[in-house]
Image (cartoon, rainbow, N blue to C red; front, side, top):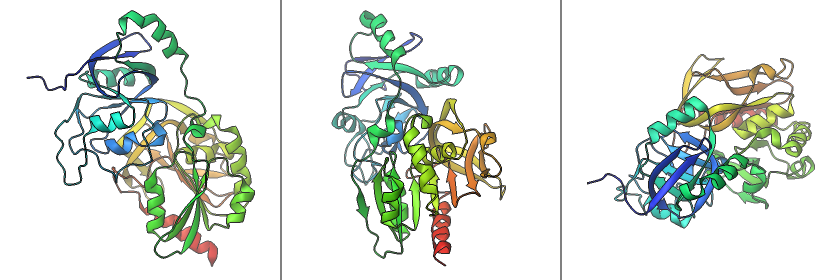
Amino acid sequence: MSLFNHSEKAYLMLANGQVFEGWSFGAKGTVIGEVVFTTGLTGYQETLTDPSYYGQIVTQTFPLIGNYGVNSQDNESAKSYVTGYIVREWCNAPSNFRCEGNINDFLKDHNIVGINGIDTRRLTRIIREVGVMNGVITTEDVYSKKDELLEKINAFTVKDAVKAVTNNETLTYEPEEKKYRVVLFDFGYKRNIRKELVKRGCEVVVVPADTKADKVKELAPDGIMFSNGPGDPAENVEIIENIKEIEKLGIPIFGICLGHQLMALANGGKTEKLKYGHRGANQPVIDLESGLTYVTSQNHGYAVIGDSIDASVGHVSHINANDKTCEGIRYTAVNAFTVQFHPEAHGGPLDTSYLFDEFVETMEKERD
């Protein structure tokens, strides 16, 4: 008996013309995106609902996905932002006391085209060796449209990603006992960032990505959070210019992932696209001040070039233990610190959640 859930055929074709044949699950159709891989053993629902994956076809390296099902509590946003989904095998009989459904139905509900039954280990090795590349998942006959699809694949780029995922209205979330007010910029934020702040007594005002400095000043926050989000950070020229004005307000700033990158660009730094990025819940990060190594959750394809940060502006505070890329910056010119990894880490390690406490302490000091 086959391990895989057979339905109709589905195909994955990469930009180099290589075709993987598998089986359809989730929605049917044809989707084109950037093929990436994530190494998380758990947290697949959080991955599917993380706006940072906008425009990407996500491959899970763990061979069995969906074994604890899905539920209404673990979504990181209101919908799924992945373009397509690739797994070795999906579990059609999930078991967990919180389970409310299976991953196949979840993908259908969110109109996400998936493929299972392919050699995800082989696919991951190709991406590691060649780098991320565009691809297509289709439930149609890929061979009869190969040239047409290859043309579309090679023309594809992820554009206007932040504009596509940000909420265009301002929303406020109240804690049981309000101690601080934080303005959270929605560049494609994960809900657990908001929850970690609310848990610490912060009233969180979630604002659109293009909210101007004068509006932030009107809200009179104790702190400002720049969230995670998708796409090439350097593409967000207007937001970067706006951050320069926001810094002048003198309000404590904490940036995560894309927020970390945008903050660096606003302060004269540079970013680069990584060969295959950091995606998963097992990325080791070294805190250069303490010398301690933390296991972190990450999801990014771009990184800040550490050497591009002028010493008069700030210094690199954390590095990736594997490839030594910049994972954090402490600013001296402004009251801010940022990290590339995800300290909120819902579905991942909680090693670095203390950074939210540090942010709260910074806001408290500004009051004294």
